Structure formats: C-alpha cells, structure tokens
Amino acid sequence: MEHPVFVSYSSADAAVAGQVCAALEKCGHACWMAPRDIEPGADYPTAILDGLQHARALVVIVTPASLASPHVLSEIGHAFGEKKPIIPFRLSDGPLPPKFDYFLSMSQWLDAHDGCTPENLARLNEAVSEALAGVAAPQGETHRRSKWWYVSAAAVFLIATGVVAYWRWPAAPAPKVVPPPVDAAKTNPPESKPQPWVNPKDGLTYVWIPPGTFTMGCSPGDTQCDPDEGPSHLVELPAGFWMGQTEVTNAAYHRSVASSTFPANEADLPVIGLSWLQAKAYCAQVGGRLPTEAEWEYAARGGTTGATYGIPAKIAWYGGNSDSVRHPVGKLQPNAYGLYDTLGNASEWVLDRYYNKYDIEAPAIGNVDQPHTGNSFSLTRGAYWESEVQDIRVSRRSEQEHDLPVPMAGVRCVIDKR
Image (cartoon, rainbow, N blue to C red; front, side, top):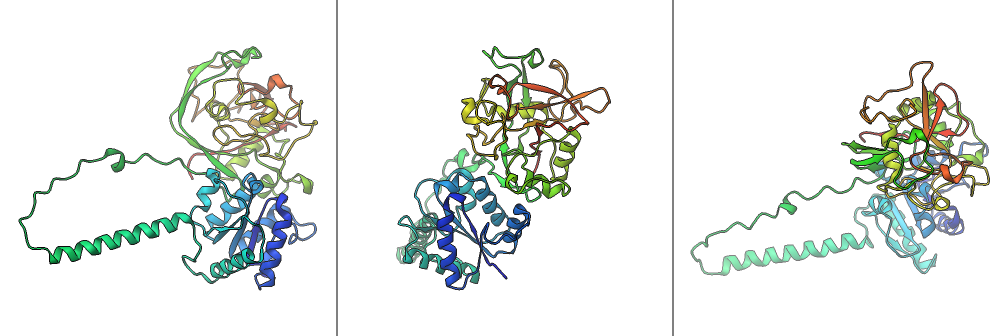
C-alpha cells in the first residue's frame, strides 16, 4: 500500500501523531508512521528510511519534545535533502533551534496551539492536499515569506509611482550623480555558519567544527592528569571540518556493515566492540575518516579550556549515573559545537598512534603517525559508561591494541567536505 505522507514525531507525542494520521487518512491521505507501519521482524531504521523515501510529503509534529529529538531532526533532514514538501504542524510556540530553523525556514507553517481541533486538522488536510498536488506558495505560509511579499509589493508600488512622476514632471537639467559610499560589510557580508546536515550514507547528523587554535593536553587547574596527557601545547587547526553530532549508533553502523547485529531495542545505542581498523574502515565507507587526536580534543572541548565543558552528570554517561549500561545517544547536554556524548557513553577511536607523551613538533592534522606496525598502539578518547568521574575529562587518553576489538570502544567520524 502506498503511503504518500510520512508523519514525523517524538515518541512523547504518539497520541497526537495518531490523531493527525487518523484525520488525514479519513480524508484519503494514507500515512506512514512508526511503529505502526513497521513489519514484525523488520529492521527499524531501514524501515523508517524506506518509508521516507517512498513518501511524497512529510508532516512533522512540532513540540518541545520533537525539537529535542535527534531522530525527528534526521527525518526532516532526509526530506529536505530529497526536496520533499515539509509541513510543520506546530502545537507549541517558541523559537526553533538553529538546526530545525535551517530545514524548516521555507516551509508552510500551520500553527495549532489550541491542539488537534477539527479546524486545525482541516487546515492540515488542505495543506497536505496542496503539497501532494504540487501547488506552489499555498495560503497560510510562513510569516517570513509574508513579510517579503509586502516588501516586494511596496517596492513595485514605489517603482511604478516613480515612473509615472518621471513622465509627468517637466524636463530639467540632469543632476550630477554622486555614487553612494561603499559599505564594505554589505559588499562582502560575513559568511553564515554552516548548518548541520544529514549524511545519507549513515543517516547521522554532522555539525560544523570551525578552524581555530587551542591548548591541547592537561587543562589548567586539572589535578587528575596522567603523565601521558602532557606536555600541554598550543595546536592550530587551520581548516574546519564536519563531525558526527553523536557517536555512531548500532543502526547507523548496521547500514554499512550488514553483518553486524544488535537487539531491536538498542538501535540508538552507540556501537561498541570495534577495533581501530574496523572504526577506520567504517568512517571511510560513509565518506569520512577518523578524527586526529588533536581534532577530537578540539571538538570535544567546544571552545572551553577546562577539564570538562559542563557538569559531568549533565553531559556524560559514566559510572555515577549510567547504571553500568550504555544509553541512547543525544540525551544529555551538548557542548557549544552541538556535539553530544564526547565524554562518557562509549569511548571513541582517533586516528593517531599512541605515545606516552606528546611530541609538540609532530603534526596534529593530515599525515599523522598511525599504528601500522605490530608493536604499536592506538588510542581512544572520551572515557565510557563505567568510567570514574575523574576520567570524564577532555584530555584523558586510553592506550589500546589497534587490531583487536575493544569492548567499550565506539566511533565518531569526521568529513572534510560535504
């Protein structure tokens, strides 16, 4: 059966999504929504992607819960990338997070702050009908576009008035035209911050990490540092890069490594048990690479200089709050770059070979020394779900065998260019 409308929602809004779907289907618009339309035994993430690919429009239930959901963001990103109509059904007012604003800024908005009333559902059905019919610029579009319509209309009116006045006014000597001063800021406006995007190869969101300079190694005032966290030294990253907003999940890893298996209820947990070689191969398969150790620490710090970028219990799953198990990615506070779980949950492989102290003259990016020989070691960063609180620090390093699976080790990839 064809399902032309994909309903994207947070699990906390399941009842509302059911009402929306029932109202649309009553009017003849078959909906796809999880978990209702996932066949028993089917791979959950694969089924969702299949539903998205076959849908012709996406309705997103906009609530605080959905705005906090990385899965809703991923679904919107897929629809945006495939240029499908996106209809936000907004049940609560308030500003959008930057990632959602990027994907939804040109969409038709339907404000339904009073809930799923018959009137609001009728408006939604009309908007869906127009979207499926390919009607451009439907009524009720965003205040952004309405504003520009009025500005454009005013401009046309003024131009027309000026033309009429010109032809009716007596001829006069042409005035000397003095060009206006050049506004350098308008001539060369600053580049806007690159917006998050969804990598179609792994279904994960990537965020922009800008270039910059930072002090790598033991943080000032950190009394827990081990000898291999020094010497602290200045590192410059001359080019920015894209980094996975979350650790690679079981579901994302399975998309590229079909032989991997996991329980159905662990799709959103970080994949673990990888060797350095497996992590490196996975990143290459999805169009990226492992971050260098310097890139990882720079991104994990999020512009801060302390041992952590926040209160450990609010930013990381570790021995003090995890109940000795991994947790779904993206549930705690991110750092300033929008990265989740850089500390705790799963530890993360980096590209470099491990040495027991930093060589401050060694390259931090590009052609770094990697663990190729049999007696060399690799390393993970970020600690993991059973680590002690003193290990939840951005400078913490863990020496590992590079060719053997490590039970607590996962991966987060970087991509240099979209």
